[in-house]
Image (cartoon, rainbow, N blue to C red; front, side, top):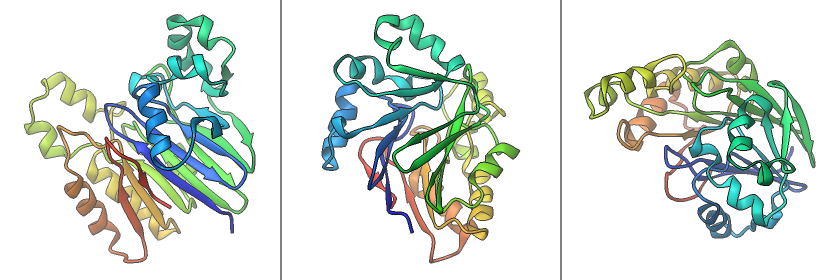
Length: 257
């Protein structure tokens, strides 16, 4: 069996970044917040930003790329991103990003150490958005946040994954009764918005039925969700003591495995 670890450095509307590590390589998925926050979070778990072999970006919204510009001024780390998503970064600072970005077609595969990372499309209101399936020997990891609904591509990519990082953004009642403007509520609920606890629970139940053992609920909204609500809804759908279910935090690292 492959040895690997998955640690959410932080997750939510303020910023997102997940570290995936094997004996041969370390990668980040997304680099939100700031370069200082990212480096501090990595240091907090006993690692160094200099150990990171590559960064894979899901999409160009600031909570997923906010750390990149200042980070790349000091550290030479390859950043893999779909070309359509990269336009915003190149417009912001071509001098910094031109030589650092590895531009890809929407569906691409990249090998880093013993990890094979393959993108798949996800429905979100960005220029383009992807999730990732990571193969490490005979084990697979799935990553999908900022998804308006569960598409056929997401089902295919995450099915059979031993460990999954999946969005559980909002409680539907809290969202609709909360303080957000109505048009923003509709955007979040839309098929290019964010995944609810209910939809997440249904999907995670299906994944666990076919073999998923470790689940990290990510990108929870501070205003429209509660960690206990998200956990309880998903746990009640699983009802399996053998499943390792955890909640990612906005403010501190959480290790899934």
